[in-house]
Length: 134
Image 1 (cartoon, one colour):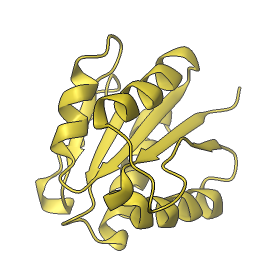
Image 2: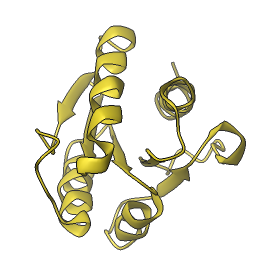
Image 3: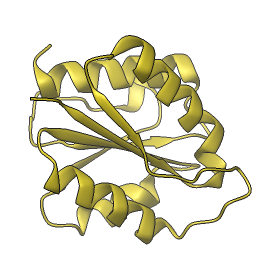
């Protein structure tokens, strides 16, 4: 069974999203990585819509996780909490991320304004390893 990773960002998280998707393709080749937008840095999307799009894919296509990226991370995390079946965790940096062993956590919300790529990739690697037991 193929594990799914659904990734979405607003325009402020676009650059980090593209780097994260490249990292996922290089390091988690057995996973199905799906970019759900935005597809250009000029594009705009309402955060509740983005959380809903990624969230629905995660819930409907198990086993799956979602990665949501915006400037602060907390808005997408809050919107994700409202979607039945989603259990988000907010990540701002390595020292302020609670990646416990709770396998219910299925949405990773990343703050692009304060999370450099090297921290984001470590957080994502830990998150994927804990969720998929790899």
